[in-house]
Length: 514
Image 1 (tube, rainbow, N blue to C red):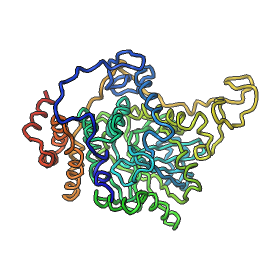
Image 2: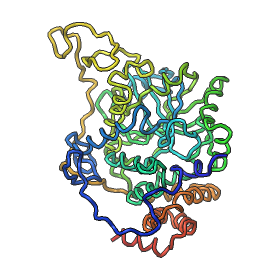
Image 3: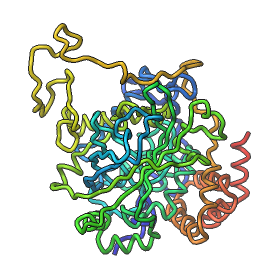
Image 4: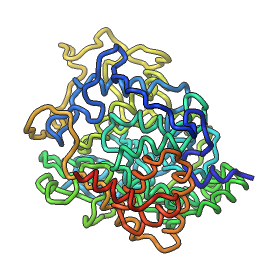
């Protein structure tokens, strides 16, 4: 029988070394340094052009941190290791040229081949698919202008808003480097310092953390992107996938029962339905916002811990999965997604988490699969490739000729200014600071209020399964204070369940507000 912790929690709890019952004398913190021993001045915020601007490439600490993180595992993915993929087709509902020059969205009934991969985020390959975890929801469009990777999750927000904290977050979720056990003490130690995680934690520990199957699950691009039309006009956009099979989740017990039956049950369900001709479909919806409207909300629309409340969603196309891969490894395991794989007319926003992912994902694929990973059939674009990148491991390209540079008098290659990125006005100074309008708790409270009584009860039970095992009273009180600030009933019920004094919770809130 499957152990309870595999379905009640994200982190698979057991007591681990390093968290003794007896209090130890505090050890003075050591200076945080880079790999070369240089002291780190700010490990909380990336250097950006203004508080809300794009991340600068001279942020060596960020680059080193992400590059080292990307090389921690071989050959399994550091995150999203447990996955399943399928082939399919995307059909556009109409001409979106007023918003974007991307040809994939340029005409009604325009068809584009896709490959889609679902995955769990934290757990390793071979782990039960039913474990509580966010689900990766990644789509590769093989467009006539090159590949477009829309790399998202099954939840509309994320835990953190700055990529400089991504390695830390994953380290906290992963097994202890001493005991090799996942431990909620490590998880909540980290998140007690990350109040913006309250929204995502509420999603994760709700029944949405254990989807009943992959077909009845929504997907989200999570970040804001930009659409740019032929005139150079910019519109910010959120991409949301909505299941046409309906939406269904499991309770923790139902997930445990399904895992006991077959711990690869989600793969089984997806493949058996496709083989039977019951092709699952999702509609792609977009929410749009003009640049001049970004500052008109009580939240920052470029903050990936927020949803765009009150913004209409318009359906622009339909994706259908219709073929199981001929070889699981060659497709599901070798497929490589990177959010920087964008087509002309679709660009990244200044979202700090997305900015870091633009480097980290592609860098991971270079490390995991090699410099020529885009030559693999599952990753190779259908459109022609013409550039001067060369050599490297497993290079089996067919570049010919003596001129491997550009420009040249031969004129065999030329760039085209109509595909240039849009221009973004900048103000202020290069800084390392957090964004304005953090609003860390309001949307988490709104989400809690949207749940049914049964869903609220399940959320409290699921959270208690992990938070109740945390030994440090201060960490436990801090976490409860976040949920209390989101919603008083939410925090009160959780405090009672994990034996935290409400006066201590209110005292912590008052201290934070000073």
